[in-house]
Image (cartoon, rainbow, N blue to C red; front, side, top):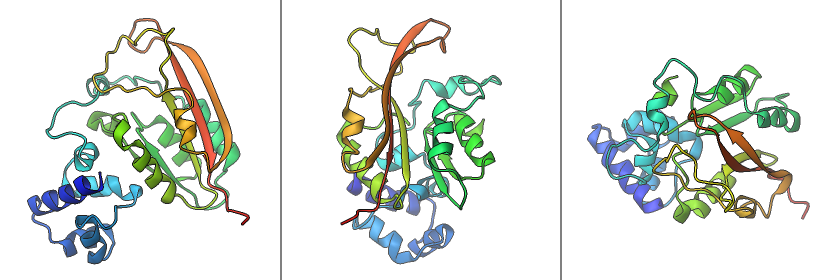
Length: 240
């Protein structure tokens, strides 16, 4: 993934007519940082991806090399274009756990990956967090394609390395269950996890919550079920 990202940054920067120095200035970085990205020596911090995507005028998935051409990569692109809120406007219950575990008593940065229509991101912003949020659906941003299985370890390693000590990661992911039928939405890029797979990425972090639930859903107008795993993990300072 690092090589794909390096090549794409260079290609799209040149397509926009920007030099490395000009791109670096827009992002508030040194041109050496951009040079290292394009030489695959380092990767951009994940918090820079939304601004980098906007500057280069390319969506994040295409920038990371997950898709080779512009096409809908989420069934929600169309759903989010309506006036109604597909997922409602109430924040996910896990948001209240984040408030409990890490209240914004000081300046805290929060990254909402796959923010959809923004209900959770707005909730956190209203409660005092410094929020960066992005989604693969342009319509959703205006109102996370799945993680590629081949790149998951590298992606999660980058997430973890980019997180400050005592930082918190909160993930909800759909999991495969043989007793649950596939959802009616038939999202073309859907890739579910397996029980315990998400937790394995945080074997070296402090686990504050790890639970799995099966719940009823009517989001598409057709009653169906989902299984979901939740992991809340904290990067603790080593006592050694």
